[in-house]
Image (cartoon, rainbow, N blue to C red):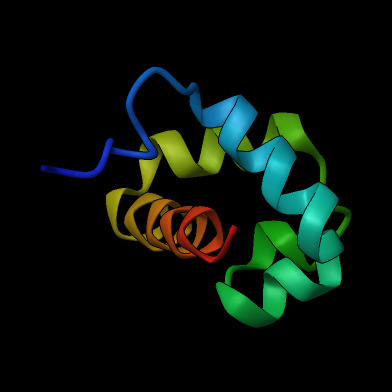
Length: 71
């Protein structure tokens, strides 16, 4: 039996919103060291950055998967 993929059916905005709710912006910046989480962070600016930066998106998605597996 395989586990369901936690990323299946979730948008990047939903994923990011859940991470911010759990970690807060400062905690998220400690987990994924990118400037858009540190300096004047917002969902909109972070989404724009993550959509253009595959390595950062992969790190954020991996963090989300780890968070889901803890629950």
